[in-house]
Amino acid sequence: MTTTTAPAASSPATGIRFAHPVAFATGVVLLATGVLMHVPDFLSMKSMNYMMANMPMSPLMLSGMAAIVVGLALSSYGLVPSLAVLRGAGRQSSVRYYARAMDDGPVTATHWWLLFVLGVALVIDVMKPATLGFILPGLRAEYGISTREAATLPFVALSGTTIGSLIWGVLADRLGRRASILLAAMFFLGTSICGFMPSFTWNLVMCFLMGLSAGGMLPIVYALMAETVPARLRGWLVILHGGLGTACGYLAASGTASVFEPMFGWRILWFFGLPTGLLIVLLNRWIPESPRFLLEHGQDDAARDVMRRFGVDLRRVEETVDPGPGVRLAPQRQGLMALFRKGRPDT
Image 1 (cartoon, rainbow, N blue to C red):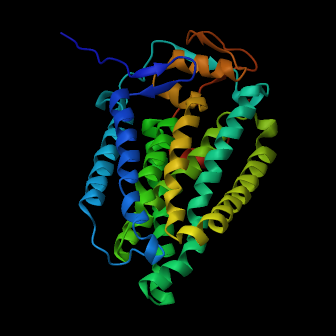
Image 2: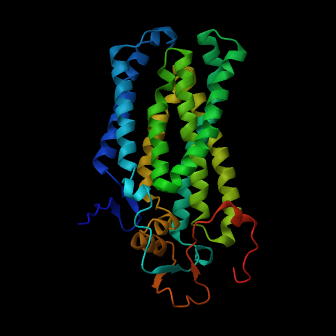
Image 3: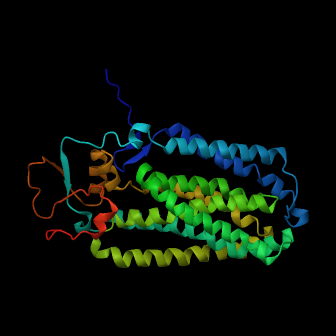
């Protein structure tokens, strides 16, 4: 007797998948609630210019941290597919799919809207490391530490960024581009309590986790762009997109610092991880899954619907049928040595 696993909840128009939608939604609510549970203690320090150094954590703050841990676990569980999918089950198909390459497709309104949404995600991502420069003077003064000790914070945060780029690159191939973006947003939500931590050590821990998610977001955004934008526009669009996203990210960080830091101190700048993380969750509705990822994981119908939105036709052809000019075989997984092989004349 054979058993089948129920497919994850999805939207055929976008290839959106939630392995466990209720768990994901519950996790997001717990994350936001856990962060907000830190706010009362922060506001209670108004008479001390919002300085919280070495103050004990209240039961409310500890409960909020517990809610964040549970919320992060639930939201991650909601994004992770079944073990069968993770092991590659269902990738084999009795037929092959041939698609007119995305490189040759037309530029549609869907492309421009996707670029806008990914641009917002890039701005939010750049804000995280950019904020480091604006919080260090206040952090050093409040904790009474030397410049050398304060420099540990950006070192730890940027180390997390480097490690996160590697981890999220693997996750993007296993969970999908869109699910990995959502997972990074969950870390943005949870680590926004970095500014409420009373000890410098806890700041280091939270900033490292924040760096993990910030480093993970960047390569996924560019991977998704490379897999959807037509080749004739890809070069200048990716460069323009990256330049504007980086500049706007620094402007957003400096703008929030100039407006809110004089009123609430340096700690408030990390709190913006909550609204920006929720914004990514909302905008993710308009980020389709990568058609390449869907094809590689046997979700052919979803891939067809996504590519149709981008003006690309996906049609089924038996293995013995010549796909014809202008139609290319969906790329297959190859090893590292494929980079050094000479390409075929017809590719």
